[in-house]
Length: 367
Image (cartoon, rainbow, N blue to C red):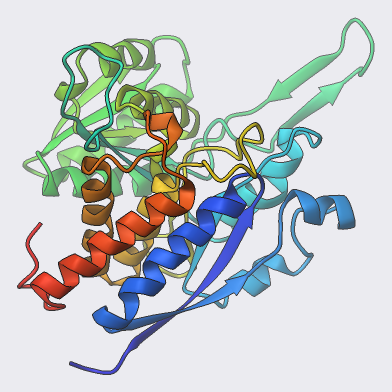
């Protein structure tokens, strides 16, 4: 085997429980890396709400330049009760997504062992939401006029470019072709008269150029109901920024817990580093108690390993998560009594046992 593969990853634990679940994820990766022949150098960035309180900014002026020299970014959580959400999000997360052209937000949703769906009889689910991540409804174009007066008005413009739709649609089509060949596109072309018909047209063109993939364009309200009532009929969903954000959270709740869901903010051409994070927020109500669920952060870390070119490490981590949960090692949000550290330790043990049993050769390791 060749020498160690080395990666530099920027760590932004951020706020609240991010400070607790991030060390858990790093512990898991550091445990398996030596046996699998790679190393990770972690660059700790103390950015977030504390940085804002001290400096008036969520990250340094040259923060993006610092991140640009790394191979990936691992984010914990952003948000604090005393700082408006638009300040925390637009001061850290969104600038990173946009500056680094992380135009795909990838959110896999599965029912993990021991996690019970609130939907009666639903014991199996495996779907992926591909969300457009840098334009759409989350635009900076707009403003407010006549502030404080009865006629005060807010205007928010949605931005849909052909380039933006094509690149996320092509990613979703390629993913669907490697899964079941079925793609569902979220739309609202019956009510949003300009952007949504344009979205539909461009997504259709991308699917037509890929034989073997079928397309359903489904109105967002009907699709939201379908996620709840017939989730097994869905495999890959492609959606605009707003629709994808809402649908992926809904699907994660259907799968039993938003606390275990991961996401990846991807720059598919790899011109810039990609960023990986759990879907959950900073949960200030439980922060500091040592009971936060680290599964979302660890699963997001597995997605990072996959993107960096360590698919074996990624699979071992995911299998370790499933094995620990199947053993009943769960935090309180999943009905268990384990602490954050105990869950991470159990996952690490299963990962190391798998490596010892199967060896580090990918051909020897079976899911």
